[in-house]
Image (cartoon, rainbow, N blue to C red; front, top):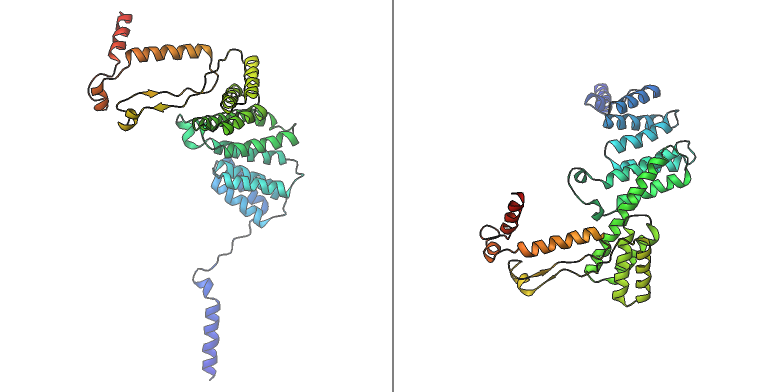
Length: 328
């Protein structure tokens, strides 16, 4: 009986200590706050953003009320930004603003938040390919504009204010151009009310941008289609007074005849769309000259269309001959 009690006690002891025998939870050594902070700063200086994030998170968890805790939270925003983690960077910035609304460097948190959204709007492909960013969703651009706007309104004397103001001007132009793209889409669908509202939004809220004359032209055309001739005349008058070098080209959607549609573009005629936007007279004359030249010398033969460009004439031989003669 005594032997059974001894065996039972040994078994219980073995079971209780089994976690440590078979690789249980390892205790993280107690690293001093100064050492953790120095390691995190060294990782930031070396560009090792993942290691810096790990050290800063550990520093904040181990010493939430230490002397480096607030600075660690700021550095963590920057580390997330440089490590291409925009969602985490914005969340860290919002958390810092919520916990330390009167901090001396809260303007830096707003600046990093705006900068994170600014870089997110300019995605990887747009940096290396000729993509038009103004036709993409402006969600990140709006977030960036809002953060920079808060920074300028609350902390106009901040050292980050000049850079934020320059970036806001870029974002303002980008958002205005996006509104023009949306308005043009509505005009193609003959949604004149929606197009006029988009144009009016640009004129009222995004002034001093290159898209303002485009917006006025869209408003004039849309109001004309809606029968609101007084509003259309007002938009035209504002356009003539403020942009006298521009002319109005009325909008007309792109139209295809039945033969062109049935043959998938091999036969038939196409009427190109004319954008409803002011155009510089010099550019307009150049476009008309190019159109006349293409009309006279750029007609494709039927064989060239049927063979998808493999056989027949593409209409450029005459133009090439003229260029050779001019060169001689």
